[in-house]
Image 1: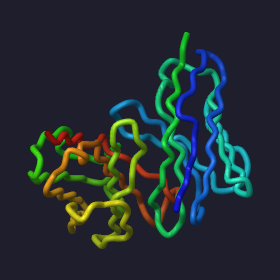
Image 2: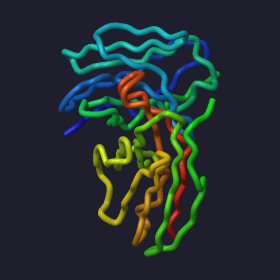
Image 3: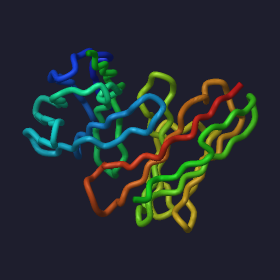
Length: 110
Length: 115
């Protein structure tokens, strides 16, 4: 089976940095993805890691350690609009379908 | 840029009725995925199609069926609806042989409410 774990909720202050962790145990691995989802809206792609290390993309960075089954999403210079659910998803291979974690609801406060 | 189009955006049905959701993928995307997202839950993979053939099957109930047509649009048919089928249904598309493996482009979703 597939198991992807994330914290349920996090709260952070505007302008600060927040790290959202994700651990996974899947039958295969062909990449880890982070998606952002505002309430009632479609998930939108943020980042992708297939090799170990850090991928930086503006205010967002994502890290992967395949040996540890671990990833994190780092959000810098937080803005109120970053309040959303952040979904960790794994491509277990054999196609492009994704298995999603339960998502981390991030609340950014003043 | 063109996005994934889903219709209807909202649908209200009674128990035991049927419903059909439609999805039009991004042009030149040949793979379509259907996901179901219940309130406060993560998206659950239902089924996918590549070049009009079913490519993968997830937790899709037997009461549901889907297909992809020659113009690559897809339809999800749901019969004998139950209260638990109330959810957001997302369609996503991807170019199977190009791009980041697994980067899915999601539509805005169809919200089904079963009364």
